Length: 217
Image 1 (tube, one colour):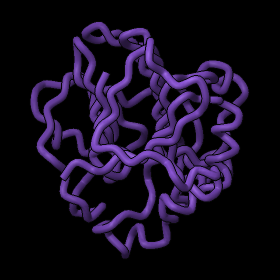
Image 2 (cartoon, one colour):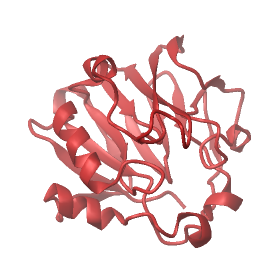
Image 3 (cartoon, one colour):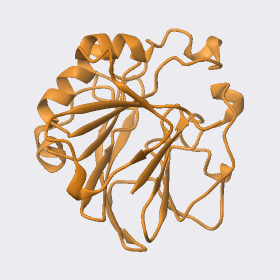
Image 4 (cartoon, rainbow, N blue to C red):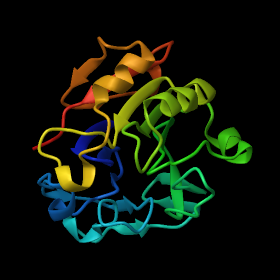
């Protein structure tokens, strides 16, 4: 499996049978140029422009934007409902968490998680191999809350997302925390920085490893 970071909360996950794109965004809103990508499956955590620009993905992808169980091109995807804020959705509504299973690996994309998931959802996603987690705060959990979620889920690889990065729209996302604040909270200041993550079931780390993927231009 190969994972590439497309910016904000968007990743490209390539398996032997399918390409999955998570949360494609509006370049106009986010401020980052969205690269040309093709996909077989697109997951949408919620209907905000910085997460639901499915027209940016070429091909004829299968769109998953609701909780449920899905099987597409050899990939199993499970969607779980959560909240986009700490007030049970009063401020920002709901958010989908997606668990992707392929090639013996379990990859979890938390979307714009705004509060600790329910105990029922935690049971479903605990011990995932790869966790994509928002760390910037403001409209999602921040560095401290992200650290708490990670301690509960005990993933083997952590990929931070949804943080303030160079080129982002300052008017909309200027108050997000940088990824460095999250790394400091985790005590992982020397985290690996990679252009892409290649992962197989037989070469997973024994302890939690934080990887900062460099955005594909």
